[in-house]
Length: 153
Image 1 (cartoon, rainbow, N blue to C red):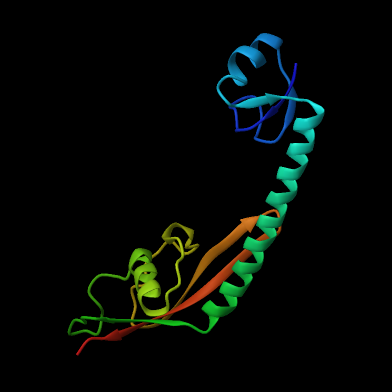
Image 2 (tube, rainbow, N blue to C red):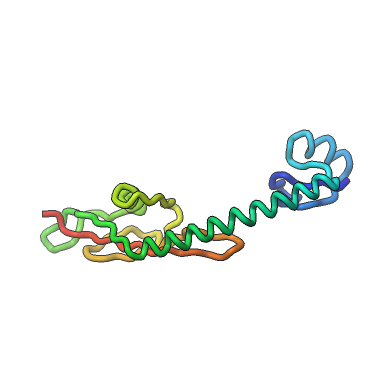
């Protein structure tokens, strides 16, 4: 039996793939659970339409990420921290704090898990951190944020 997978199925395939499975497995397990549909002419056309829509959506996300990367180049996220006698700061600025401040100051939302540099900003002055804004079939877009850490007086 030929089926088109609607969702990823472990050890079988990814969503959108057309595969051949045993008749009982397809009709008694995959199709009733909504994991697949029988491969017919109509379902093949629907799959082609869905793939086309997904390609358009990915292209739009890619373009939006490129625009955001350009915008991030000119942004400085400011922080004021307490400093010890020797001029070193207490603690560090985590990616979560950077994301919150970026949203508060500039209204830009990014995912804290997408920071490429996993270490926190822990030095006075300017620190450049990279964020993966998009990764997909179109390519990869990486944005750079300037974080300025100043002394609290």
